[in-house]
Image (cartoon, rainbow, N blue to C red; front, side):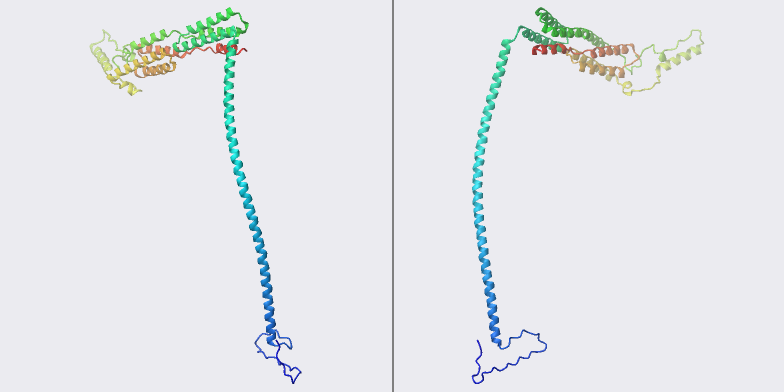
Length: 367
């Protein structure tokens, strides 16, 4: 828009510039010949144009972003559909795999059962073939093994080696009559075991039982440590001094008083107070307890319990050394019998025929 000019004066009049205060900052001056209204209109148009450009750019940017978001949504939808399809396929494959594993396990169990049945049938067939094809020598080895093992069990239970020696001798005679060189090592092993059993056989248990009976009968006569009046009269420290007949009366009286005082008074060192201070009723129970221990030794020997017999004999020996008079001949004899029994029981061992059993196993294996 432009201002109307007067028609009588066509020359433009100069417009005086507007004075501005000295303190105001300098502004952009409008070009010459442009009114303030025209400048404001131009400025507003420029601002509107800029706003239109910015709005257009924003719209374009929104459209681009919307297209991108739409593309992303479509891609996510496709990926979700693919994932669901793959999950369904995976579940189907897992179900199929489980069914396959179940079928395989059932077939494997059935196969193992059949294999076990076949193995059992094979072992039965092998046993049958072995029993049918067993030779006379193998039957002889089996018979000898049965007889020897039975005799060995009897010897271990009863302690008598005669049945075992008889079984070894019978096996030796049967091998000799068979005249088979393959059974020679077995025959020599049986002979070695028989010789070893004869050489290491312990004495008859009757002797040990007889010694135990003697000990049991002599327990009541054993003097205890606190039985001073019953100690051996031949003990030199307590023997009465002889009184000479030609001695003066005062000397004879002094010697008699001295012997009486020595018989009434005893001075010594007590190493075991519980043995010396034992009461008479306790002495009775001590003897009965010793008899019970000897009876336990007898039962252990008869039942072939060597370890229990050794333990009880050790207890009996300790009781004799602790509560009974070691200077008495009866106590010494009892201690000697206990030592003999300990040595006899210590040498008692169960019979062993390891060589014979090893030779029987070798002969049965056919090597």
